[in-house]
Image (cartoon, rainbow, N blue to C red):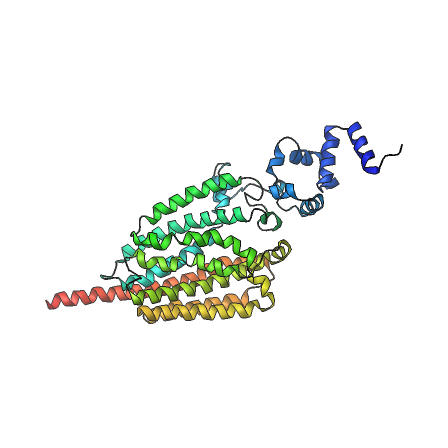
Length: 404
């Protein structure tokens, strides 16, 4: 009796089964074929190591698994532990958690921090009596620690939502959850620790900050979903990352509900920051534009790829215009308008002109350095304006005392 080919293969396989042949057969089924050595295949498929594979790969068909293996996306075997930098000094068990919160890539924390710093410096001259530079420094340091913690929590939430998408994107395929180094449950528990730490920092501010700070958690949670339903997830990210532009006012004791000038200034600063977030994240999104298209991830970079520079220019104009409006609302002086507004216009124009959107390396360079260029000049202008106004206030008080 002649058996069908599939049955003959099964009989032959059972008749000559050996550990090496079994590993090779399983490797071929998953698309590894002859390109992997028996040792590599055994390390992936023998014992309990299959638990390290992302669950989305286990659910996929053999064809899709073969395609994923062919491009090595999400393969734990490609991961190399850090040998230089801060992470190389940590115990090996801590490294995946440090990578999860992006301690080795702190630029996102700086972008989250700058709006907090902007609002603190913008609000300082509105306080009565005007807060001292030492108080402004202390508030800014608290915001910085909070930005580090909350950015880390946001990264974990993002990776939990994207654990099925990250293995298919070159830049994200080796993230700890995507490669199986951290389970979703452990990541969720670590998020809880970070959120409680963030709450502890928030409690160091005036109690009114609780009412302004806690609602931002909703935006942190919702942002990763935006890329699934809209071509403009960068606007949701802007709402999230710009929240600090509001927080500086209550942190210095200014009641936004009853102070009309402060409320208007906070609104202009917040919307100005949203434009900046969309601008720099549109450049950032161009690093993943090809993989995003294949994975079905939506972004403004994909939607408007042919007109990116025009959109970036428009966003820069909106950013600078709203920043200037915030200065007008607070009675800022020429140092602010020349330093913050003029500096932002120049640095953004240079970045938009020079960035090569077709180069991943160039987009990353401008994303990292643009943070310090634009954020730095805005902070310098706001800080200079505050120091001048504080000095003038001190001199006026001295003259009044002399007259008495």
